Image (cartoon, rainbow, N blue to C red; front, top):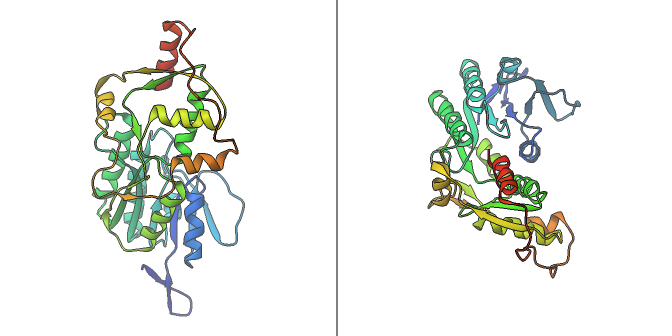
Length: 296
């Protein structure tokens, strides 16, 4: 544990800085760190209401504003901040670890995504380059790759379900994991010693995209026509080959997608089938426009 001198000449555990501490995962991790008796500092781009148990620092990892102040006196950094599309995550991470190295930080914990090194899309490339920034920083580090959390998959499925005809990329699978289980793992890693690349964390089951959509529609009593299509290019081949799925040795969460959905709505389990019998649909031009809009 990283320690620093107090006013009485004794030592206390150095504060932990959490970037993205007000986000989905941050709101689940920070209380765990506080319960462990640690002082927590949160870097946020927006002013936050004062809290007795958390120190908030306003800053921006892309412009570097406030970052030096945020890392000052910190022993460990838990880096959760990131854009929804990961744009700029690599540069933000490089800025953070440069400041952390100057401040003498002793441990950087970084969250990444399974498949960062196997799926040729900008999102995954940015995640991989952010990982490399941590590795190249010279700082002791821990990197956890996790599957997509249930909440993120739900947001994606909800957006798709707004379409009257839903284009579904064939062969695309996910193994969603519970955000609370990811938070618990991150808290344990943050409180522990640097461990390098640790085992991936994934959900207990693999689901096809079509199954995820059907489960959601069924829970909400909705009916839609699902139209499969072949996702083109290298990215499509990578998804069909399971490039975004875990490999041997991954840690597995316990909460399933079905359990998560059941807690989101209170809907009878014997609802009518979610998939309509194919009949009249929009013409091919309209369906193609929806597909392009969704997967651009």
